[in-house]
Amino acid sequence: MKNRLPDLRAARGWSQADLAERLGVSRQTVNAVETGRYDPSLPLAFAIARLFAQPIESIFRPEPRSRRAATDS
Amino acid sequence: MWPTERASRQGLLECAVAAILFPPGVLLLRRAGLLYLDKPSSMPLFWSGLALLVLCGVAVFRIASRREYPWLLALAAVALPLFDPTHLPYTATRMAMAARDLILIGASVWFVVQSVRRADELERRIHFEALAWSYTAVLIALMIHAMAADALPPLRATWVASGLLAGWVVAWLVTSVRYQR
Image 1: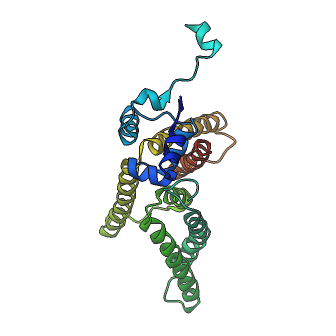
Image 2 (image 1 turned 60 degrees about the horizontal axis):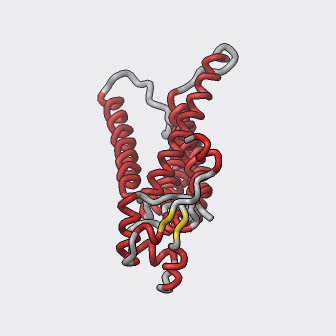
Image 3 (image 1 turned 180 degrees about the vertical axis):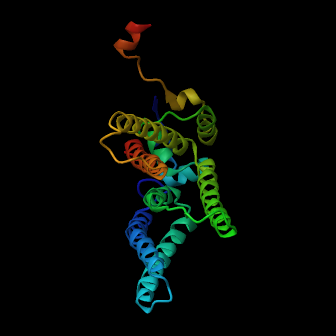
């Protein structure tokens, strides 16, 4: 899952720790979401969308399906 | 903070100090007890062992006060193999010692469970993955031991528990770092 979290956060001048505090999660979680290593749960995704006042789909977007996955389906 | 907010480098250092001090402290006190405390020669052993355990206790208190429970799990993995239940007859003393151990273990388990419940979703996922790795590794080790039981020393339950905890902490560290940049 790709996301625009680093851009949105940078636009507000927040550090990862600032964003983590606003979302009630650890800085490690914000870092993992931003780098795409961890896909947030629906409640966390909604919290992020609410914080930035944007729809979820404008912040997160699924990565293109790989050829293997497309072949399997 | 490294590797997570739940565990700092300072906590790792204190954990290492406590892990180094705890075994000699226990062994010295045990040795002093074997020599009986009324003999003057055993008193230096007793005080040395007690001093080491007090230093270890200070380190544990500092870690616990910051709620860095993963380092406490690591310490428990070091301490468990040294756990030697009394072989006294079933007397009030033995029951009191058993109650003391149960209270200590219960309080530790409660502390860890509360800490994990307070963790956020990624931290819980990391623990879930770490526990899966730990249980699998210990299961494989137990099966290997079962197949070579004749050639290996008999297994103690505390070693298995220690292996589970050590595997949990190591897998937690690896998984935590994997989720970091």
